[in-house]
Length: 66
Image (cartoon, rainbow, N blue to C red; front, top):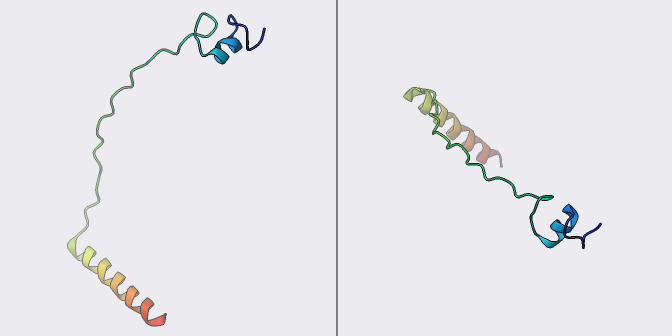
C-alpha cells in the first residue's frame, strides 16, 4: 500500500490517474461579476486649484532647500 499501488489514493496521485478513491473535482461555473458603480466625491473647481497651488508652492520650497 504505497505509491506503486494503483488502487490507493497515494498510488493514483503518483501515477496521475483518477478513480473511486481519487475522484476528479467538479467544475463549477463562477457567477459573472457585475460592474460596480464607483462613487466619486464632487470637488469644486476652486478646491482643485487650491490643492494644485499648494503642491506647486511645496515643490518650489523643497527645491530651494535642497
